[in-house]
Length: 202
View 1 (cartoon, rainbow, N blue to C red):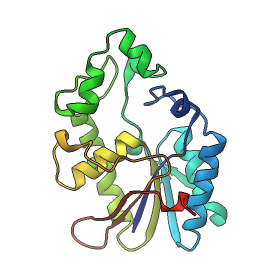
View 2 (view 1 turned 30 degrees about the horizontal axis):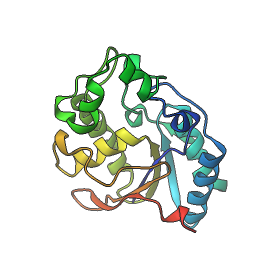
View 3 (view 1 turned 120 degrees about the vertical axis):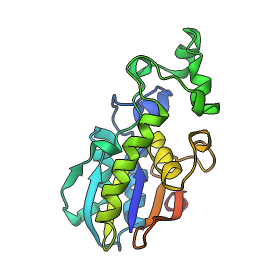
């Protein structure tokens, strides 16, 4: 079984800044929410732990795995979508400089043209295809924890459910510490949960 988790809340999340491949630290809430997920998954016998190469994902993975003491393996294919020159700026700032493609990113992803240095959804689909091939094989006969990012997980779910780019933002959205549970025992991955947040209700 593959336990795919979005990282905890970060300082940039609170400030509504575009993160992408830049990074910011988990907030106190982000760490606390990750600890709640760790408690909810305490009985899962994780054999391997993976995270994107970004600090916020690695920190979340370390919290969620708890006292198991497993190494957190870096998997760059789990990295967040790159937003190039948008990174570090707020949505308000982008609107002020006339970043018209911001609306396409959210509402018309099939038409989205990434900013300088950024990634397209087609590029993200290729990235998550690689991530899936690797993780599904690792999770075929054992429980695996993998920590990634909002847009990456949405692209992952969309691609591996056979959907198109224009369907990438269909509900549910993936909130911080949202859990996506994927059964990898068959020929095709089976999505059991997507973006589940029950651990925050306890």
